[in-house]
Length: 175
Image 1 (cartoon, rainbow, N blue to C red):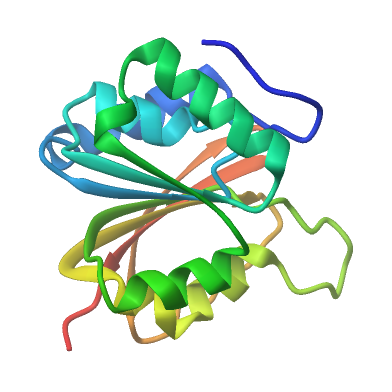
Image 2: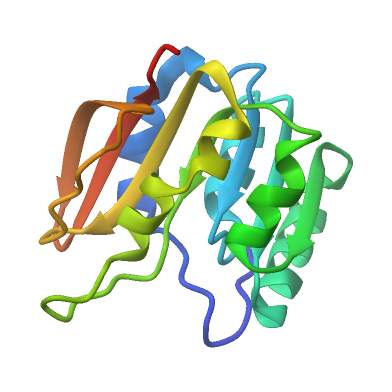
């Protein structure tokens, strides 16, 4: 799959394969939201594994160009929506109109001690819960040293480690 310019950070194939193997049939028919989408690799993989739709969100113009190019290359444009904007603005906008069964997120890592991670900020964002189906899942890639504390809206399920990357699986909590 073609890749875009410098700030596009595609998820390594090994990590992507492990994530989707563990998701199995949850992907089939899912409405997917790919946040911090980068090259679009996660959302495109979901579409290729039977997801019904995918919405890609990234604020970088070069990432959006890469996503559009990759969708065209895979002939998946009709099942996709691409939004160029801040993640938090996108979640507010989507809250009134969309319900997703699967959210895939790969925010940039904050490796400096004491700095809030974007992964934790995303977990804490009430607008994320608002766009989710009641039985929805959040798959969150983050730095290995992030000690994420899920709010009551999310129930931690499991984690996979791949080098410096952790992939945490959260189910939307009832209520």
